[in-house]
Length: 165
Image (cartoon, rainbow, N blue to C red; front, side):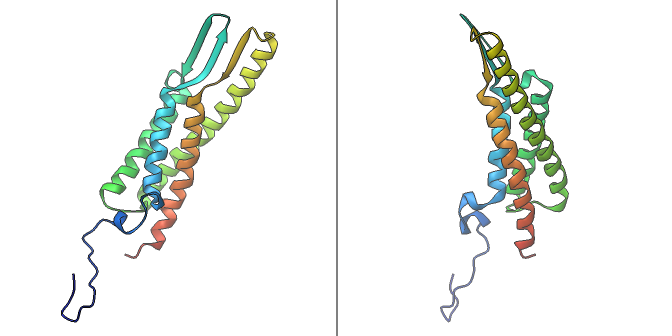
């Protein structure tokens, strides 16, 4: 739009995303982190191969995986709610549950990742390589999503201070 003097008038009807890169928005990255957490819980966390037998256990088959799944869903819904309101940041009320979920899921997934890796290594070495145990791709994806959720939760909250009221 232009005024009579040809001075540009800002058009505030466009959503915030059109003014910046989609990946620079912390809520978008928080959405992606929540999706990674949820997807990682449905993939194998532990894989065991012994001769002709192959077994795996997904995250949702464990208590920890179910907890990470619930945290991922909460983080996803909080970020989606912020996006639906055309925000690029987390409000104070949304920050607390998102931060708690991100902290807990990060701690759980990193603990499980190291525990599974150590136990799998011990099983493989004690069985003289007849049994091959390893971490599954799901725990890695859930851990990456959890760490990302923690990082982007903090950056989405910090972005709140940069937005003019």
